[in-house]
Length: 95
Image (cartoon, rainbow, N blue to C red; front, side, top):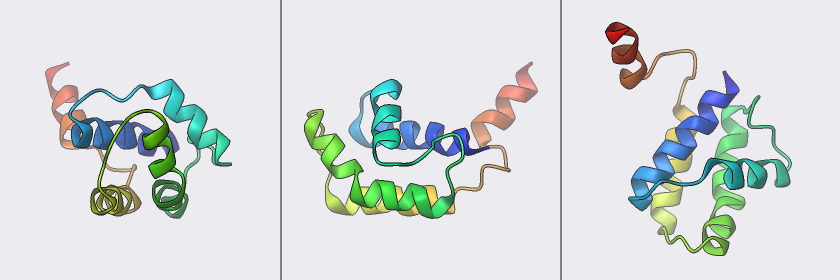
């Protein structure tokens, strides 16, 4: 379940930046900040986004406003990985 929060982070960042965010460097950043993206709790995701993500974005040449980062953090904190996203739901229907 926890990985679904990480996947959602990649998606949210990719949409916000209008380009695909590489997963592995972001995964390493999450581990480097002391979190396990496989078992992320909502509060941990929010803390990572607010404290470590802005620095990671700068180091990798990305620019997001503080307001946008806060919005992503709140969205991920509210994300419930036990429910299918609309994309996942429709992907299951097409199988």
